[in-house]
Image (cartoon, rainbow, N blue to C red):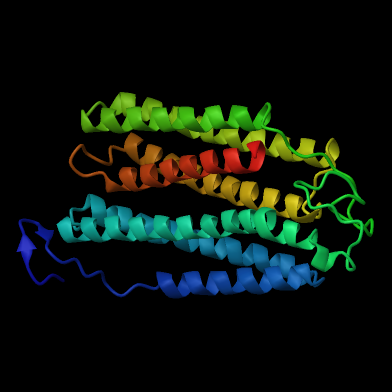
Length: 293
């Protein structure tokens, strides 16, 4: 199993052959097939999607349970810890590129596409087009052909600002929990971790209420031109990442209650903290670019 050992912990840990990658791939196959069929009108697609999600989640639960058992069993040494750190670093980097693409789309629409459509070269194509951001009413900039309903833009007051305060507070509570773990104060660590999870859940509820307000009161929808599409793509994907990060922190908290993690060995905690702080930073950029500018 290992080429060299360092005490009871293998220097190189080589896991036994596992069924989990194949099982996860089967679940994702049904998820993708079901989703594509469902959006194209096939009723059985919803059932295939649900089956694939359940299959995939059960597989992940079993896979993570084995990984936790290996970690708590002392099989993960320095090399595995280093590989986890590099893996999480590259994963977060890929997420930076993911959000970078959407922020670039927002910038390109505002700085290039809209001004270009309002230039003299396109005057014959859209003679009534006014190159202003955002499009506030049909017939102005959003839709000279009246194919986009009038809408009101989302302002930073007060729901987005409340959510900003929630996320910033969660970053503080998470940092306090981390320092408490380093000092081996498990009770304080667990308490502040639950506070962090609760703040993440409240953020999601506030964003859900914001979407209801946008649809019902502001008539701001995904179909509200480039402003609506970029607004919901950025805030929606960020909300999904908050949900994933909240689940990470929840599972870490439950593991803490079971006695897992020590001041010397707790990268599972650190990896989730890295991800959560990344989500905080993305929100700050989003809060300025989408709600203020």
